Image (tube, rainbow, N blue to C red):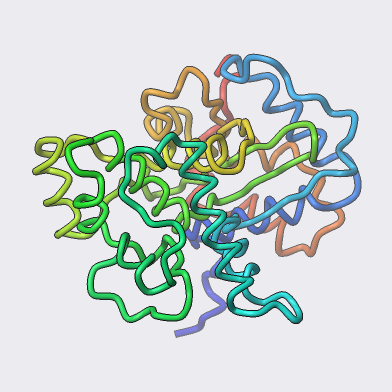
Length: 295
């Protein structure tokens, strides 16, 4: 087999590749980011248009693992002791719970040693010396901790899963606005929980296939409730119908762009010729035409 024929760029269908190319184009000096924002501002679902007067300060991130890396940073700063790191981790959880209105409803000893503190959130764990990341918390233990309150249980799970999610592409102008972009090709919106035992707990608590936490809901929760940022969610899909399906019940406030339309407005001259070939010849996105102007 000749791996050069057909070239991989002509048929690849990896969403992260297209995110990487778009991020590359948006980080270039020139008008690409301004053009992208203007294209987005044309969508009625945007409501108020985003300002474009401070784009030199914009930050562009792929796979935005903010909470994961923030947590890791608590323990890796120079000369920071383990007790100091644990103090920061404990304070982060306690402050977040206070903001969410959970502190008064949960039987937690906030001054307990790390292993005892972790026992609140994890069943059968082996983490003894460090405050464990919420990523490690177990849904079964959170179910027990929340008692008879389904709202507490759901909030605890959303807090836990916020340390798992990595929005595909985030664009932020500090002090101004943030975009949370969900890039879709052939995958569909994810839901939590995903594990069989966790799904069983949710079904028993909320009813079959009810109470699930949508990917869009979880992203909005992370930005608004934990990071205190009002992020505008956006979908980029192969066509408008797929994008609206992804946005679901949020479609009226979530603008949809399509890949061919976005790339057709980008200046590709500062990129390798490969980028032009990818966006112009890839069969996965070229199957669909340009987006109508009133979406």
